[in-house]
Image (cartoon, rainbow, N blue to C red):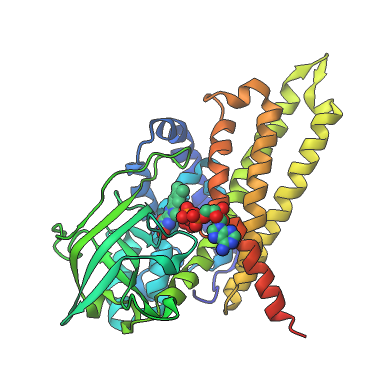
Length: 395
Ligand SMILES: Cc1cc2nc3c(=O)[nH]c(=O)nc-3n(C[C@H](O)[C@H](O)[C@H](O)COP(=O)(O)OP(=O)(O)OC[C@H]3O[C@@H](n4cnc5c(N)ncnc54)[C@H](O)[C@@H]3O)c2cc1C
């Protein structure tokens, strides 16, 4: 992550162009793409043009070099309209961040300019059928063969697996290592040759996964069966045994992002509820004048604002440098639980209409729970927060 260099006016200009895009391009099509579970090809082209695939990548490689603070504000705004879109560039940026933070100079020169334009898009490949929270239990193996690695194994639930091209893949380079994390490495793997764009053998997608929400963006499997990649280009950092550290490092910005997405969901649910409560009448008056609804709105507003402030706090800490497990964990945990609570309350305020596909509330209600699971479940976030609390306050 670069030191923030934007002036307030520059940040406003970027946020204004995002707002304009949301109103003109995203809002008119979000409902149709969501309910059809259609990958948003035109919007992905727009996102590339807006520079979102390089939003937090150094200008040296063609990126916008935005701070996490500005980036999280962008994410909140887009998630307010359609959360799925944020997954398309954020999962990609988690992959890019790992290369930017830990890659060799040669790897940065090779991959980052291609990531920034969106010419090569991807995500983070950690989860396997039998290993999610317990990342050290993964079974995908990369075996060194001369100047190459040969990869075998299966990843699942990978965002952008099908419509993207590549992923930062967590593997075991020493399956017998003890402790287990010492045998883990990260590789950049790709379905196509980055130069010729020809398909590569030994890597395929398996099935597209059907989901409750998070429609439009693809979640899929990666199946590696003797896939070969050039060690110089694919072993991130050029040294085996660093993968677990890189994966958890990459997840920090991911957690700030998930927290920002959660705030976007909560803000939209609150905004819609405040409007609806003034227009829907029962017993001769708007429901906003019934105390039962006022209590809900009061709760929703206070929680949403608190979540937004936690996101800003975590983003600022990220921009200041160093590990931010506790700040990112608090923001992710609180904001995602808030998104679930606020979306649920919005559904109650909307009554039967909240359950209708004609209103956005049912989508927010389906999207919110994913925020509690992705980038480390909320059970794990509380454990991380507690461990950090003790570590930072040793007696
Ligand atoms: C839509 C979607 C998109 C995703 N995108 C990606 C992606 O792009 N890349 C990727 O790698 N993964 C992705 N994932 C996977 C996601 O990160 C995992 O689902 C998540 O980490 C949880 O892992 P799991 O599902 O295996 O649950 P498990 O690890 O099996 O956990 C099950 C339950 O046990 C709890 N638990 C587990 N261990 C402990 C413990 N030690 N202490 C307390 N509680 C514990 C968990 O909190 C959870 O409640 C995605 C998932 C979804 C649904």
